[in-house]
Amino acid sequence: MMEKCRATRRLFSHSFKSLFNHRSVSDHSTLRSASVFTHHFSDNGQRCIPLFQLQKSDLLARASFSRDYKQTFWPPLGRGLGGMMCALQFRSFGSAGTKIQRNPSFATLNSDDVTYFKGVLGEKNVVQDEDRLEFVNADWMHKYKGSSRLLLLPTTTDQVSQILKYCNSRHLAVVPQGGNTGLVGGSVPVFDEVIISMSSMNNIVDFDKVSGMLVCEAGCILENLISFLDNQGFIMPLDLGAKGSCQIGGNVSTNAGGLRLIRHGSLHGNVLGLEAVLANGNVLDMLGTLRKDNTGYDLKHLFIGSEGSLGIVTKVSILTPPKLSSVNIAFIACKDYLSCQRLLLEAKRKLGEILSAFEFWDSEAMDLVLNHLEGVRNPLPPSVHNFYVLIETTSSDESYDKEKLEAFLLRSMESGLISDGVLAQDINQASSFWRIREGIPEALMRAGPIYKYDLSLPVENMYNLVEEMRVRLAQKAKVVGYGHLGDGNLHLNISAPQYDDMILAQVEPYVYEWTSKHRGSISAEHGLGLMKANEIFYSKSHETVQVMASIKKLLDPNGILNPYKVLPHSLSTH
Image (cartoon, rainbow, N blue to C red; front, side, top):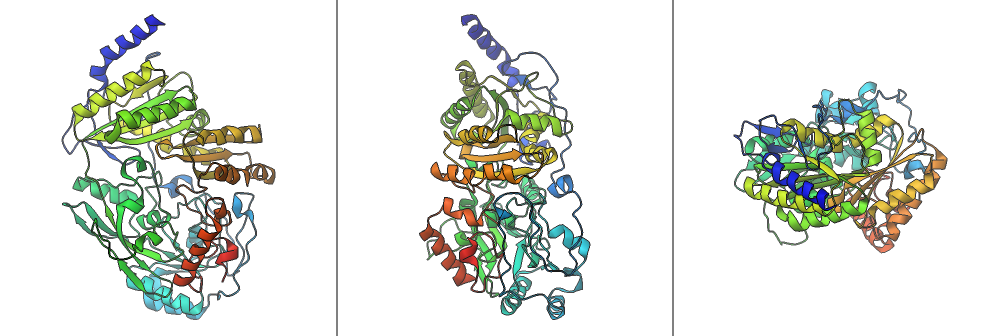
């Protein structure tokens, strides 16, 4: 044992010079990783150097990664929209299996309505083509499919205002749609709601380099904003796997969390202002750019996370951090979940202000990625470990960053928290590490039908749910756990041979009851949408939900904005 310890010490003392041989490079030599987060690394083409080298081997080949989830995941949708008004086509999945009745107070679209919208938007921005409607009527997982016969593409806030004013007067229900990358059925129609797509409102309005304040329209794709800011020497505080398709308006409306919440916090803190259009067409200009403003109620927070049920977000002002030059990424294996927890605690204590991401996933998730994603290899061959952690650090002082990370990894290895690990030594390796973590949802999709749950839980209890679900389901399905360990967000995925009512009965409501019992939230970052609208009481008291319903009634008295979503159907039906 003593000899092993000495060998480890010798390995570290010998390899750290090359292990952390990063240097700041000129602006033209930036790294765009699979997370599209800008890094500066050495361009010397060195291989990753193992922290605990079991054998020499090639690491990951560079994987070509399409970040557009629509192109990557979406098979063709089935036909059959036509002019028929029909209910959502349910399969056995999630809570949305409950039958929903169309609100009889809503009007049905007619030719006069279409004529009006063409007068406001022009012919080309009023879409009735069945093929295009087929695409926007379904979510990217193909669990939720509506029967809308009209897609509207406004290009200005005034047009959104005119649309809503008219729809409110006619009692025409609408569903706002951004990139349509949601997982809970929040961005697609349930019945025949008019789809209002924000994709044509995609302009950057202003950027202030002194304050880092970005003002943009709601239809800007997140990846495009990241690229724009990269050229300005800044970064978005938000980063998601679906960045190639998702739009900032949808991100704000769902209060999306993402990969670097541990460093930059939630959108409630980063969004300083927004513009929103109410159901009656009134425009709320709350597009402030001030860090401090205590004049009255801060109404913007009502729209952050309300999923388009209170108003349609049309513009956003968001505070963006400066891009820092020193970034390191470690790919680490741990023997058990307790080691992951302890590693997180130590990372917060020892890495502190330079810690920018702390992601984890289990061996089942790793196995799916290795078997279903082309070009991905195990960075720590030959075995698959029980748990994996990806740690990213970011700072402006390379030597300071290096020193802190060296000390942290050495201590963690000597104490047994780390079983094995590698550090990215060049651009491709850093990208390949992120590819594994961000590729888990894609691998799950390729593996077959999935039941997905996005939960916030105390970190010490988080993985217990995964283990209990494995006991409950036995061999009926594969249970996969991964997520943002740094902020207590578990993505529980159940991969099954087919959608099955018997499997669903074993999963729900047990998952929600377990989460509620442990003082967690049934929605960490995906929203409630249609899937969890009736389950809100597992996380919120009846009194709290009643106040929410009162706010909804005040701002949208006819209930036309994204109906059947967010609030329980018993309270949201007008």
